[in-house]
Image (cartoon, rainbow, N blue to C red; front, side):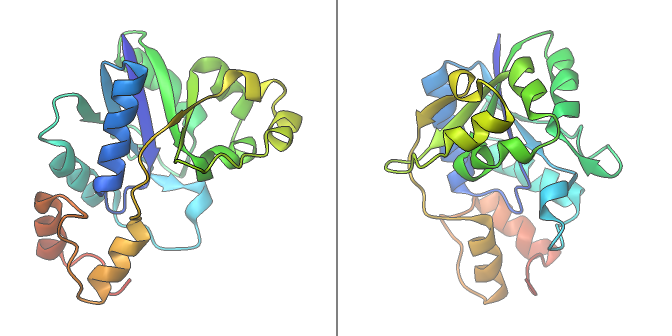
Length: 200
């Protein structure tokens, strides 16, 4: 079984996440994609992150129509900063020893050498960089200098370029702008119901 792991803060989940996850599933021949919301991401301590349970609920609402998508709360159940290197073994065990494909956007891939034990991550699963058309400006030399041979082990696939980000969504909500068609309708209703991002 081949399982994609798609990590992020998903604050909130939007169509860009969903399109990219589905394209990766198809192109890599994955049986499923598991969305992995970060608990307390060590790399985003410069801004307030929405409560993990609310982000989890938004993901559940956003993926409910796709039977090939799942969500895992293992990082939300861990205290302190969350690291992928700790999550991967638990995810493999949860999925019966499945072959794991760790899906990374290009910004995350560029910084993978700064992660906790990045070499071990690459050994434990297949790391796949999700590149957008015309965006292959990765400094492999810098990555290889910290993780020897990383450029030979990390796979990249091209996915659609969707010009939307979670920070855009938060800003639009705060400015009372419509986010229809950028975020699943059920997630829009949840954001409104809970008054999220009103003061982002």
